Image (cartoon, rainbow, N blue to C red; front, side, top):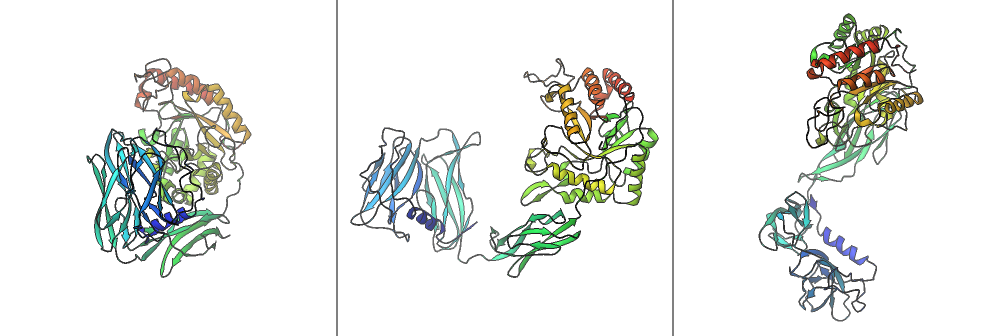
Length: 597
């Protein structure tokens, strides 16, 4: 970052000159500090005490000086007072006990006093290193920069420490304010622990000429929105030193209008347009894709009715290459090259499928937008566009009519949020996804496949439970032991579905949804625990739980979805019998469609 000439010092001066002309001497929590002293001067400062605030350690000495409002050193004799600790006639201050102190410097005659705040801390015993920030700033000749030093503890946390400062290429005061000299080049600024046992160094680059603007950056680089809606664009620049800087730009746009502050309003015609930010001869462009707003569609027609509810685990195609008997349904990711063949395989095999047309890891649909890693709807729409062929549309419509396709889930767990370093299971910061936004995704799928039931996978009570979907037709509501009583979970889910005029398919987390093992010995061999799950303290459901919970939940919705069975689950003889019991119980239950009632 480039610092402007004398900026920090002048800001400090203006702050001092605007202070209310009352000086209260704060008593430190030690026997050295005194209470407010009415005898100390209480006038607005014209002569400035430097530094104006500083942190030191007990027994560490610092020397104060005074400057004029224009930054010139005051050479006249000063009188010094403090609210605690000790200060000499030469302005040297120290304290033997921790606390917060006031130091007042005053010249003779009509000169007005000024006050500095000194925070005194006990030397922390377990500091492993000193850390100076900023680490490598670039300054113009004569400019100032505020350096700070913190102590880093063994556990990575930081603490206040007292240091002594030294610098080449300029001067630095006891609080870390560095003023660049007249020579250009690279120089060191060093903060040394008062015990002289450790130090840290920053490298300062001093340049003679002011940096120039070299490029303009417009964010976001691309964006998709519906006609008539708005999006805030912003612009910044890079200078010749490589620093990002604020820049005044002129915005222009096609396919809509944009204000001088960058608020874009989409026009009424769908298509691809541009937003442009211009500064002098520099410019940057963002692509804007406008789509027509989606209105609530007619509910999907109910496919062939009859007896039986489908059940099965996810990813049977990708893991096993096909369905495992006696399960009657699978949920998988598809792409344009496999969807037709997989629908044909389901037809010949006599089982049903849940389509995850935009399935796969969250990272497939994430981008850095406005400096934040978050869901990129344009990527999601681009994946959906790959299915926009007459062959695929006809194949899906036929499979829906035959009852082969149960429905399509547009997104899994839209409520998860956080940063990318949290393991990847995120759609971005909290609030990135909303029911209204998921409704938009359902509308895109519905516009492409009008007879296909569209839904979303999440527990009924974790994602904006007070709001309703208008386009999405069903939810996949997954249960595990941590959700509480299974009957209460079922009834609450059914009540919300009825409130929102939606269908519901219940699911179970069979791998991680049993009674958790939190006794400090991760074995998952206790009551309600069917072996270790994927991660501690999660345990698998037992065969009895899968049977009882599966029949209770499956018969209440339009099917039973299980995430995610594996070879161990399938190989267990007790679980094989459970699957047969589920097949018999759900196979004889009345059919329910996953379309909107």
